[in-house]
Length: 175
Image (cartoon, rainbow, N blue to C red; front, top):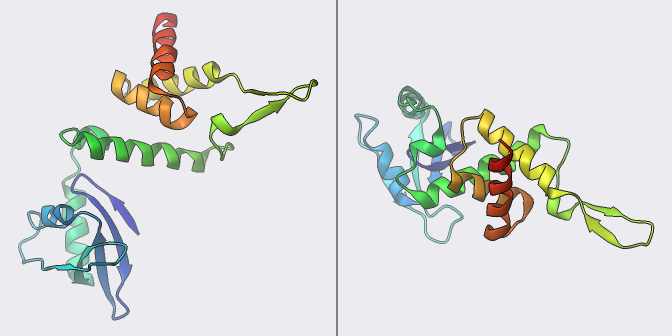
């Protein structure tokens, strides 16, 4: 199970003994969890593994930790809740965008969808329409700040920053 939380990114897997290994790529993410529970959490370094550190928990400890994380959800938007860490915010936004494809019939980036023309030349699908639809979706979700909008357009449509800003400017002018 992946957990993408204000405290960090974690992978929870069974330990083979009815317990949980809570793994992290960033040690500080596990250290953040120490503030959520009373009992001490022992972080183990696992060098050379996909996740370089972990906690080993029994099921009761695991439930207490998940409950504490859930009780701390007091924010309207996870990306905004990690706003003091711009790199993490951008990564979380990219994960959010990638997972949007689960609810979409489109499973590949717009930048790779091509339409064959009679002259056998391929032209890119009109990305402005796609860009405007994405920006409309962001606005509906309350996520329209310039930085977020540009990153969304870059990631989802495969645009460079200047082109993404151009679409954003045209979209703003059309509002």
